[in-house]
Image 1 (tube, rainbow, N blue to C red):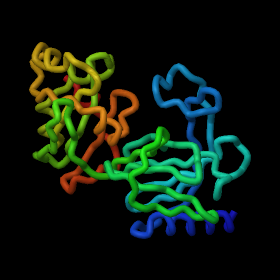
Image 2 (tube, one colour; image 1 turned 135 degrees about the vertical axis):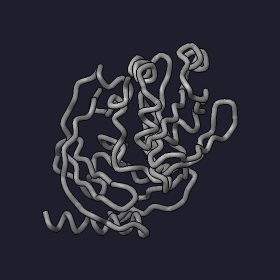
Image 3 (spheres, rainbow, N blue to C red; image 1 turned 90 degrees about the horizontal axis):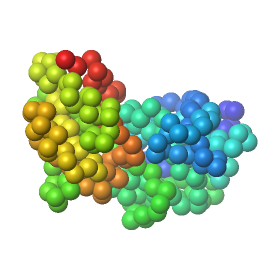
Image 4 (cartoon, one colour; image 1 turned 180 degrees about the vertical axis):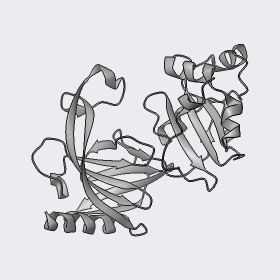
Length: 252
């Protein structure tokens, strides 16, 4: 086991020379699975399987080596899946390991290339179906109308809340949110709609004090929006906070 951890630490330094490894540990996560493949859309429809991971925690991104096929392989090409995770995600976003994978970190593309058992991360333009995505700091959001939205921070914490009119939990949250209570607690809420055409009518019809913002498909990919509702909580330094805001605590 010590030998394995040494290999993983070597991989981490090769992959991310500008980040500091904080800890290497193990964990287990339940993933929705279909045909032995991870499912992220409508997860509740599929069986859950427990998968073991080895995690490298760094100051910016966390890398997961996932033993998807329960064969005890976590290193080199024996890794069944590679994952990345921020503090905002309750489990890692994962992709089948290959000789070359791509990572979109804060909207920027990188190539993850495995050679001789080591992984190197370099700036790249790869665009493949199985991209990994991660947000660790606020990046500009391209809206559906083509405008670029970069929120101004008026509170200690700013919550970007991605929602849609067809998402029942989202509707219940926005209808019941006490915006004044949020502001008094130092929290700024910015709802951003995704993949719906009647967001303006909903906001106006329910007299909600929010601007009608609809994220573009491109930015939805960068912000790793695969299901709703989804939120990112940012601090004044524009970095992702350690935990999400529990919006239910601020219902009327």
